[in-house]
Length: 235
Image (cartoon, rainbow, N blue to C red; front, top):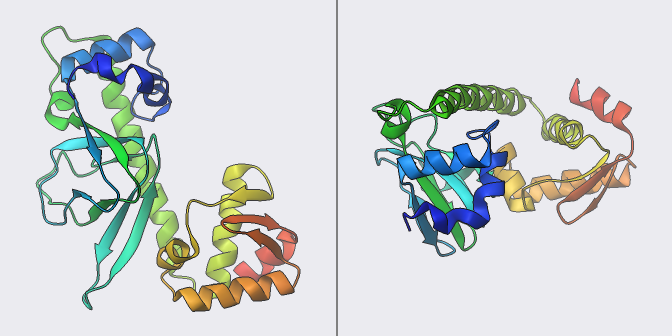
């Protein structure tokens, strides 16, 4: 679908994304009319973007969930990030000649909006003020992703699985602003994110639960002793 009027139901979501932060509804409508983005549906398991292909659009997840994975030399794959409605992809590399280093897969049936990157870089003749706001938002978005990647590198260089898990749970708690929170991963997804075996992760979580550090239910966690979690993260 290319007619922006078909996106009416998703305007509130788009206005909450980092790309359209600060836009009024009228500015969003005008921008979409100029860009004529393409919205595509994908079935669970379908490939949204394949490793090695050029990226010419910024993708915005409108509904459902997608996951970016990177292939490993042994034929496996590692989860890089999990994306839910409002998440963006392609914003970092669309303006370069670098091909996609990851494959993006639909984890559920989903709807994705593809915004042509070249239309963002080159304003139309009307030179809308909102276009310059969009460029500024794009720079902020790329910067935020750089720091998010840096945080994950900091996580992965920790030596023990216990320290990685403590650091991750403390960061998610801080992000949620509460001791009880839900993470965006299944156990298998979290194991991929922390670069460890799922069985080892399950054992570590069980030990932390037995030690009275955390409570868990599916992908929800409650931190019971943040001081001790901090101590174990730093050692």
